[in-house]
Figure 1 (cartoon, rainbow, N blue to C red):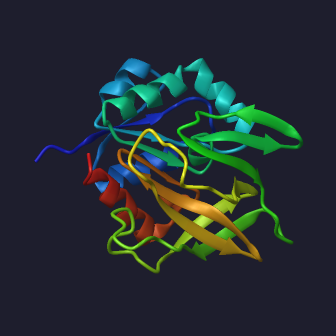
Figure 2 (cartoon, one colour; figure 1 turned 135 degrees about the horizontal axis):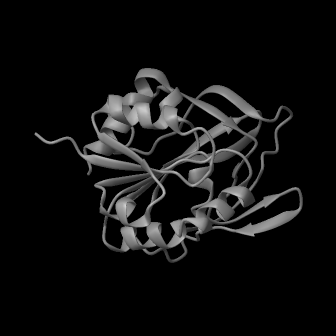
Figure 3 (cartoon, rainbow, N blue to C red; figure 1 turned 90 degrees about the vertical axis):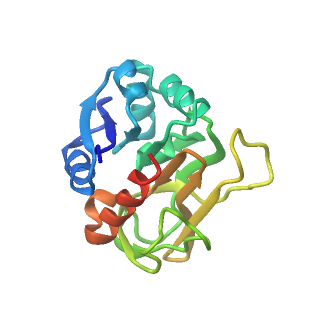
Length: 211
């Protein structure tokens, strides 16, 4: 059986080598590329992201990444966003009083967590929905987070381009944020599967099984 092909989008979002290695260990043939044509043709596209929302959106624009994501989703081709790579899929992000438009695949605003200790860094559990494919076999496991911002509220009644998303939430120091989304071919996690040991590997294997 041929291993699925995955492109990790190289758009200047930081060190992506750990993501490449993790997806390889999960069973894929992985290419690190900024070429939209190569990224479009892959079985799966992984969009990483670390650092500032605005900087990630700027880097994404330089490789025509927003259009690439949209084209893949219209064609039903799977995309996985991780950390800020998840956040940029929402409508907008607000950091230090500056609002930056995101890809707009989902409604919602990425904003600073309202918790006494920020960043939220370390292991935490998630509240995955019943019947989740993403978390199959790893319900109740912990995952590794490093972030100061997240989507703290999300109304699911509005129109979305795909079927209704399955949303996973995580509580932290009295606050609550979206920690993962499954939405047809579009998946995303606020945590880092590539840093989440066996549970993260199983999650990546679950994603590869959909390709």
